[in-house]
Amino acid sequence: MTEIITINCNNANCYLIRTASSMIMIDSCHAGDAEMIEKQLAEKGITPEEIKLLILTHGHMDHTGSAEYFKNKYQTTIAMDPIDCTILDIESRGLIGAVIKYLSRKELHRSLKIQPDIHLVHGQRMDQYGLSAQIIALPGHTRGSIGILLDDGNLLAGDMFMNIITPSLAHIYENEDVLKKSRDRLKTYPITTVYPGHGKPFPFKKVNK
Ligand SMILES: [Zn+2]
Image 1 (cartoon, protein in one colour):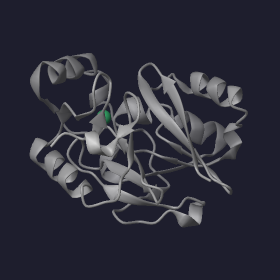
Image 2 (cartoon, protein in one colour; image 1 turned 90 degrees about the horizontal axis):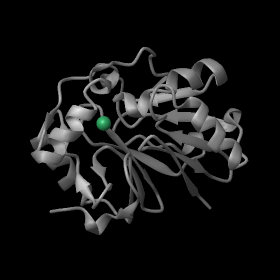
Image 3 (tube, rainbow, N blue to C red; image 1 turned 90 degrees about the vertical axis):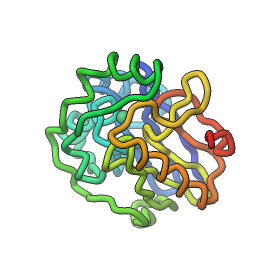
Image 4 (cartoon, rainbow, N blue to C red; image 1 turned 120 degrees about the vertical axis):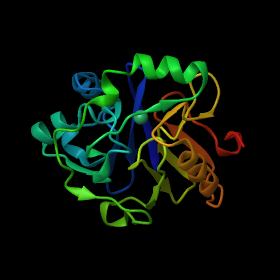
């Protein structure tokens, strides 16, 4: 039985995936959110030392900000596509995109200070970490964006999608054409539910055309 636990800090989600044999964290919210994460872990009866692996879906600081804290304090192993250790400029679509880009402007241009311990690639299986899942490359929002597709059909999608008001494709991105191609490729996978980096989970069938 695989359980997905949501931790929300200042409008960014990180997730814990609990399986029979392991606890894996997906993303780490903003820098400065670590104590809020620790508090929510404690409320759920989880100790940070239980977390075997921290997978970062991409390099933006509202997802990677507390990774350094966990690595330094708990020696948590960090996994990501290392190309996202350097972040490129972002473009936006529409009014919502312009607002998100403006509000995120400070975080979107900071790069990671730590190097990942594990370099993830498309198609990589995660069974050796106790997780029945594969890594799917989802470039577009950033070059190194990845999704974690569990064998039960749940997709942890980082910022490929958001669901603050309604499910939607990312409103900010490094390359919109590449982003749309990633969305189209996802439709070839047996996905049931999307867990976005911002907002609530939603059925994959609600992904816009
Ligand atoms: Zn992002």
